[in-house]
Amino acid sequence: MRELGYRTIDLLVERLQREEPPIRRASPAEMQQRLHGPPPDQPQSFDEILAALDRDVLPFVSRDGHPRFFGFVPFAGTWPGALGDLIASACNLYTGSWMESAGPSQVELEVLGWFKDWIGFPPAAAGSLVSGGSAGNLTALACARETLAGPMRDDLVLYVSDQAHSSIARAARILGFRPDQVRVLPSDTSFRLAPHTLAAAMEADVRRGLTPFAVVAQGGATNTGAVDPLEELAALCRERQAWLHVDAAYGGFATLADPGLLPGSSKPTPSRSTRTNGSTSRSNAAACSFETGKRCRERSRCTRSTCSTRSRPKARSTSPTSASS
Image 1 (cartoon, rainbow, N blue to C red):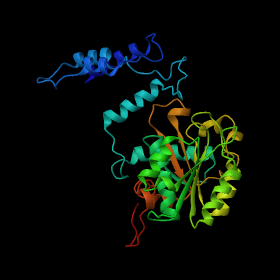
Image 2 (spheres, rainbow, N blue to C red):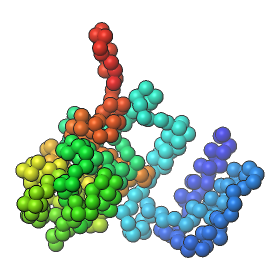
Image 3 (tube, one colour):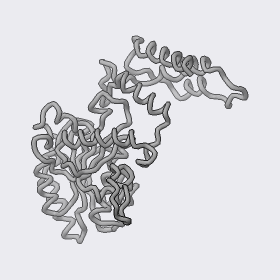
Image 4 (cartoon, rainbow, N blue to C red):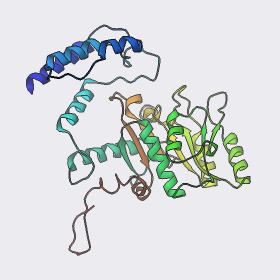
């Protein structure tokens, strides 16, 4: 095990230190020629597998942390973060219940506590670390629908701007929203969703007998970094009793540098749920997102995770009806 680990680490260090372009592309025909073939009949040596990986797979990727990579939102992973992934994979951690993962679950709860403090959520808020931004947005919208409506209804309307991430449309489809139940509103010249645009759309839907259900605002749009006027949108959502979800994957952690960039830290956040990415805005490995909601009970009902199985066990009392979480 040590020998295999040493050889793998050596390969990774050598690869990360190579001077390579920020992206190297290949055609499907070229990649099929390199990798096509039936599964091996006999076991292969680990060195042979590593060599093929280094020769035919790893060179054909984008290096998003490269100083010359400006094609998409960059994410610069760190070596300690990579080793953290190695530890999690090698230990094959299962974090589905407190009984089987008290240590890792407490780490998650502590990290979530930091995040809630940074973005201005109250201590009673609940959340979880999920696989990425798409899962975070899906979880938030599921909580919103379960809280405000329960099962899917034909009268519910979701409002997003034309700067919304594509994961919002996918989440809506998964949750049962038809295309005519999602309003894609035009942004202004600063790529922000103007409150009067949202108000007009909501008013028109109310006159048609529909229910403004939720609004997805941008806390740093992926394309431009634009931040919607969150306070004004929040006031409108309160007036209409709609859920406000802030997709802050790109800009959520900007509050650490300047609390004035997004509502949070210095005052309570106006949103009822927020997701932010450690991969896009901090030096973490890709595919990690933080999603949180203000009400623990709401989140437990729709995901049956953080608030139920991940909660800190309560002290056992002498009452025969008491139970730990």
